[in-house]
Length: 613
Image (cartoon, rainbow, N blue to C red):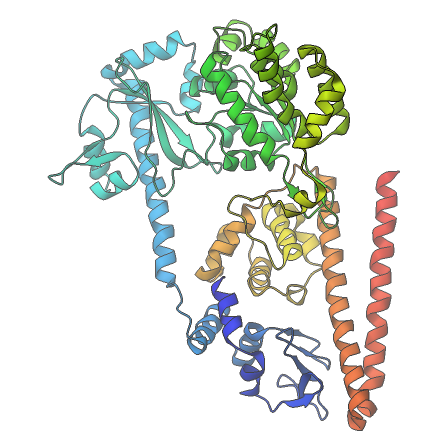
């Protein structure tokens, strides 16, 4: 539960509002003279069941306890949050703590950047780095690539980097916290990397988060990555993504290779949609980062046994990530329950080679291999059956045991039938026997209903429509004019409303973050990192138009429902004054939303028909 939700749960809006106005019971709700404008008959209503308020008079606005306090007391959001938190007995994380975290992260990025520049200058100029320069020459890495990727060299010294960065004003703690240094028992600090080729690893925004370091003297480990830090998590980063993301969008394809050198060589030869994990299996966080750019993924890992196992593990993660059920559709994401499928393929690298070798020796061959990438199931068939003696009963049985569950889990019935036939021929077993066995593996409808998919670091939102709309506006500045059709009243979620208000008054994400109360920074980051399928510009505009329409419809329905409730209660209670003064106005207001809703949905139908032509 968020701090805001906890405050709302502990405080009753009736109690909060009644401290400022005299509320009168009106059926299940309460009414009063509006505290925000002068009037003779009540048009201000509080709805306990929804924990909201609304003025049906000249104000025409409403909201929750936060918007009431902000409007009534003339507070900003942070001040209202503190006031209500005090009243509710909820402890707030201090702004200083949030700001301190942001400052710490920026300092870590800064010291990493300083280290990257130092290592890079040594690679270019220092005599000790001659072996590193020679190694890169042997691998075919050009001076332009060295410069572009800011490759470097860490000297064979215990304190060279320490002496350099401390002379620049950094402290030994900065070195340790960034993973660039290690503390000894006596409190002294020594350099983490020595006599290694240094490869800066940047996050998607292009900031140096850590390093990959290759040995130059044959010592182990061959590659050494930065340790886990506040800004470096190798399970959440992909090497080269900061440089590859535009090419991935344009080509609608991401190619995942195994190593740093594969990425460097690929980019040097113009294959700029190539990226790599950092010596680990692919993770759901990495795949989710790619989903924002493309749903077409090709894996090109080494053709040895370890590479094959890494490919199979990567496929498992990729299939899971690209097969999750969502509560939105691919276009619009507003209704129904559809399965988002990724197009996953395997680039079959010749035995004994890696992508680096293939690209250096024959770039055209690499292009051919990419174009002839194998489907997932074809690769899985080959990978599994190549380890079995299919001529034996044991081999046939093992093939069925390993392949049938994979086939059964395929989303397409046509593909399942195709691969069941293939398996039947391979193991010389009657197809009906395999179908019967597959039926036993497939979950029943009841079991499917019970099954839930765990989404990494994702919680169920109370206001998904608002958050998807905000995410698009935040992630795509070119859609700003579409947001002008909305107002703060379209956002029921307190965090969403405050973010929208701050967004309207900011020209950039940096300015927005500065204008926003620190308690909302985490929510801002969640919306900035929300994943969408790759949209064309037209699809983006269609999606934001859909969201805007539905938010309008949602607001109009809510107002109409409230008005109908008030009319019903007034008539049942025989409130003559209210009926005399308000019924005509309320009926008119009730008709207006109907007309607006009709216009909105007729417009939507016209646009959809136009898109289909």
